[in-house]
Amino acid sequence: MSDRSELAAAVLAGDRAALARAITVIERRASGCRELVGTLHRQGSDVPVVGITGSPGAGKSTIVAELARHHRTNDETIGVIGIDPSSPVSGGAILGDRIRLGSIMRDPGIFYRSMSTGGALGGLAPAVPDVVTAFEAAGMDHVFIETVGAGQSEIDVVGVADTVAIVLQPGTGDDVQLLKAGILEIGDLFVVNKMDRPEADLTVAQLQEAIELNDHDGWTPSIVETTATTGDGIGDLIAAIANHHAQLQTCDRFEHRRRRRYRNDVKRLVRLAFERRLDDTLADEQAGELARRIQRRELDVHSAATTVADDVFPPERETGGHNEGHGSCSH
Ligand SMILES: Nc1nc2c(ncn2[C@@H]2O[C@H](COP(=O)(O)OP(=O)(O)OP(=O)(O)O)[C@@H](O)[C@H]2O)c(=O)[nH]1
Ligand SMILES: [Mg+2]
Image (cartoon, rainbow, N blue to C red):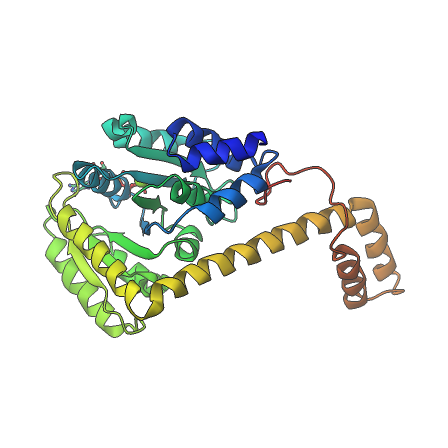
């Protein structure tokens, strides 16, 4: 048995230290990552994946911590991925979240991992879908992904999560922003947090109106009112998530979401592989030469693109060794 299949077996057996090692392999895209994720996926099973998104400071981390605490009282295990939108240089938000999550970080039934989006383009950290696979293989009862709704990541989380909960806080004009950004459509349920604030009821009313105006594909998203700092409403949120999950189970919607997740992920990986090969094929020198020929009007951009694409696509072509920083696993 190879090292990676031993590691996979240990993850599948519920070994936490092995899970931590596997996630490190996945994040670093280290050698054997592809084999590892493949085994974990084939032998893993479906676990409800909940995306928690919303504006900065709305209380997402506090809510996730409370959800985790609630599930722990039933002895259920939880995997949490916190997406840090900040640049890899600052790392400030990661530290902030660590401090806020406090004691649950030391609970062996809770596995928390924060990841940077690692790029100006935003979106999810590239390793997120594979880490979800690892959590599923490790037999976690629940998986939560926290993303900040400040860019692409709250849209991308839809591609991974079965249920998307959008967290708003009163008195920040969130509702209007949501409508503008088109975020309203992606919510399976909404949480108005900080209900201890005076403007909270107004936010709930505005949100209710906005939801009614929107088409949610036959599903009416519920609004859950929470005060995460006291734990008020967290039980309702758990019930709302379970209710959405149960609804997905009827009429094949769960399978539909899962297929969407896998389809997205395959496309993402193909895109990355293509880009990597493109970088190798179109090294600076060659790109310069092409550009010169186009400039001399010996070639046009469309013909050049077709030639390069044909060059990039041969499936068995060697792609060179630099995997670091790319989204796909190496062999
Ligand atoms: N008054 C009040 N404050 C809250 C509540 N929930 C969270 N907070 C506070 O709001 C601040 C932000 O909470 P977080 O849980 O870190 O919010 P977040 O959405 O994870 O923030 P980012 O990840 O930085 O976007 C903290 O100071 C919390 O203590 C609440 O229900 N009421
Ligand atoms: Mg947070």
